[in-house]
Amino acid sequence: MNYHQMKLKELREELKKRGLKGHSSLKKAQMIEYLLTGIRPLKTTVKQMDYREMRNKELRSELKKRGLNGYSSLKKVQMIEYLSTGIHPLKNDQISATVANGDIRESSSDSIGYSPTLFRGSEKLPVNQIISGDCLKIMRSFPDKAFDCCITDPPFNMSKKKGLGWAFSSHVTMQEQWDIFAEDDYFQFTVDWIREVLRVLKTNGNLFIFGSFHCIFTIGFILQNLFDRRIISQLVWYKPNAQPNITCRMFTESTEFIIWAVNNESKKAKNWTFNYEVMKAMNNDKQMRNMWEIPITKRSEKKYGKHPSQKPLAVVNRLVLAGTNEGDLILDPFSGTGTTAVVAQENKRKWIMIEKEEVYNQIAQERIDELSNMLFESASEKD
Ligand SMILES: C[S@@+](CC[C@H](N)C(=O)[O-])C[C@H]1O[C@@H](n2cnc3c(N)ncnc32)[C@H](O)[C@@H]1O
Image (tube, rainbow, N blue to C red):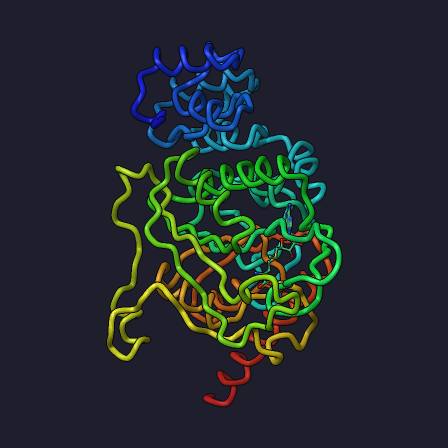
C-alpha cells in the first residue's frame, strides 16, 4: 500500500482497521509513520515546520500551543531556537542540563571555544569540535537546518552473535556494546537519529549513511517509506583485500554500502550538491561509477589506536569531495575515530563530530591534531 498517496480519511480508516488507537490529532506524515511502524509517533512532527518562514505572531501561537512559556520578550531567532530545542534561550541552567552528558572537546587547531550557551544559535555551534556524548541528546540541542551535509557510519547491529564472524574485514568477532540492540530497539534507534539528522540538515542537504547488509535495508526503508526522502544513489564500497570467510558456509563478505539521500521529500528534492567534474577528474576523466574499489583501512591510518569499523580516508574523501563545497559544515553523529573530521579539515570544510566513547574521541583528536601540525609545519616552511 502506498500510504503517501492516500487521503487523510483513508489513512484514518486504515489505522482504525488495524486497531492503532490515538490517531485523531496526528498529521498525515505521523499517521503514515504510525501505520508503517505500529508505534504511535511522538507529538513532534516527522516533517519539521519551517519556523524561519513563520511570522512572529505565528511563532508565539506555536510556542503557546506547545506549552513553552516565557516567550513574550524573545526575538524571532530566539523563538525559533526555543521551538527547535524546547529549551528557553535565556535560561542557562536548562541549557547546562541538556548538555550534561555532552562534554565539549576543543580542537586545538580551529577552536571557537566552549561556553555553556554554545548551541544557542547557529552562529554559536561548536564548529570543528568533537562532542563526547549521546548523539540524540546532543543533536536535540542544535538548531534546525544548521548543516550542509551529514556523513555518518552508524552502529550496524551486527554484534550479537557469539563465536567467529565477520568484523569489518577482520576475523575478530564484533561484540561491541555500542553495536548491540534488540531488533525493535535498533529500528526505533535508527528512526530517532535519522529524524534528528533530517531536522538539523538544510533542505536539499546531502546525507550519506554507511551500512552493511545487516542494516542497510532498515536504513533505506526508514528514509524512503517513513520520511519520504529522495535517494539519489546507493554506493558500493568493494574491498578487494577483505578477509576470507572462515566458516565456508557463505560468500566472502567484501562490500559495504553507502546510501546517498537528499533532505527533501522525494518529489521536491532539487539543487543538491554533486561535484560531477571533480569526481570525473578523480576517475581518469571518465564518469565516476557507483562501485568503488578501495582497500580496507590502512594500518598507517590506525596508528593512534584501533576501532573495529574505522573507515578508510579514501572512501570518505570521495563523499566529501562529491557532496560538499569548501566552507560547508558537515555533521557526523557517530564519529568513531573522526575519519569524517580528518577528511573535512583536509579539504577546507567545517565539521562537528559526536561520539559517545571517550577512547575513540582521543584517537580522533590525535588524528586531527596531527593534520593541523602538518599544515602548520608546511606553512612555516613556506615563510
Ligand atoms: C561504526 S562506528 C563509526 C566509525 C567511524 N566511521 C570511523 O571511521 O572511525 C559507530 C560509532 O558510533 C558510536 N556510537 C554508538 N551509539 C552512539 C550514540 N548514541 N551517540 C554517539 N555515538 C554513538 C560508537 O561508539 C562507534 O564508535
